[in-house]
Image 1: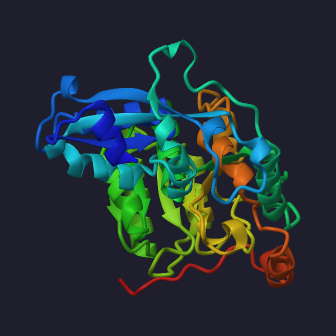
Image 2 (image 1 turned 45 degrees about the horizontal axis):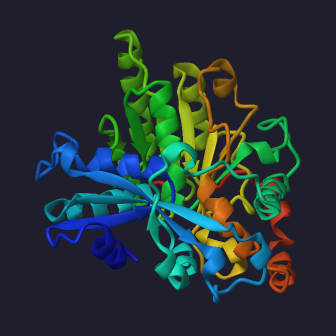
Amino acid sequence: MVAVCKERFIRDSDRDCLIFPSYRAAVACQAFITRENNEPSVDTATVSIIIIEFDMSRSKTVPFLSQASQLPAKIQLAAVFFPSEALLNAMTFWRLAGQGISSRLAERCLPSLKTLTQVTDLTNVFPRQKISPAHKKVCQRIANLLNRTTPGALRQVSVSTHDVYLYQSGMSAIYHVQQLLSEWRGTESIVFGFPYELTLKFLQAYGLPPKHYPFGTAKETDELEVYLEVERAAGRKIHAIWCECPSNPLLRTVDLHRLRRLADTYDFIIVVDETIGSFANLDLLGVADILVTSLTKIFNGQADVLAGRYVLYSYSVILHSHTNIHPPKHRPKSHLKILPRFRCFPQGLLPQRRLHLRYHPTRAQQQELPRPCHTNQ
C-alpha cells in the first residue's frame, strides 16, 4: 500500500510514506518527525499529509468478512510523506505511539487498491461514525471482567462501559493516556520499577523526561517520598507515577498501597499497566486512577490481533478533584472500522475462556493485590 501511494502521489525516490487511520495521528507523526531536537533535522514544509480514500463498494473480494453489510462504503486514511532521511524518526513514532494502521485494515484495503484516490474536498473527511454494536460489546465485556470482584473498602463503585476507552494497540492506549495527562498538568512524571521497554522509551520521548526508580524497592519508595516532599516545598507537583503489576518482564510488583497513599498526599495520578496480571485476575482500581492494558494477549481469544484499552476510574478521588482532566468525547474511529470484523472472545472460544476464568474471582477477592516483590537493593 505504501509503495502504491509513493508511486501514485509523489514519484520521488528520496521521499517515504507512512499511513495512519486518522488525520490526528498523521499530524502527530508530522510533529514528531519535525521536532527541534531530532537528528537529522527536518523542515515542517518538507512533510506533507494527504487524505486517501478506498472505494470498498467497487471491490469484488474483501478478506475475512462475514458481515460485509457492516463495511463502510469508503475508507479514508491519512498518508504522511517525508524525506527518506527522516524514516528512522517516523518509524520511531510508529513503534512508540502505536498509531499506525493495522495489518488487518491494510489487508482489507488491498483488494481495492485500484480505487485509491486522493481526497481533495476536505470539508467532510473522516466523518464521525456511530459506535458499532461490536465496540459496545467489547467495552461491556471488559467492564464485566473488571467488576467480577465485589467493590469493597478500596473500591466503592463498579466500572461502566463509559469508563473504558479502546485503542488499536497497548502502546496507543499508553500514548493517549500520556496526552491526556500532559494536557492536564504537563509536569514531570515518574516511572517506578522497571517497565516494558517501549513504555519507558515512549515516556522518555514525550514531554519532560521521567524520573526513573528502576527497582521499585522499599528503599526507593522512601527516596521517592523525600523527592515528592522537596518538590512540594518548591511549589511543584508531578503529574503521574507509571508502574506495572507485575512488571514485564521481571514480574516484580511495587508497593501499590503505599504509592496510593503518596498520591493522595502529593496530588498525582497513578497509572498501572496490568497487562501481565490481567484485569480478569486482579482488582487494582482501589489503588490506580487509570488502568492500561494491552488487549493483544486476550483479544479474539488467540492473541492474533493488536488492541489496547485504558480505564479511567470515575470514582477516583484525584480525578474527581481535577475536573479539567478530559478524556476523549468520542471513541477512537479506527476501531469502528476494524471491530465489526472480529468478535472479542469469539463464540467458539468463549466456553474455553470461561473455564479458565471461572476460578479467578475467588483469588481476586481473597488477595486484591500481589505482595510487593523486591530485591535486597
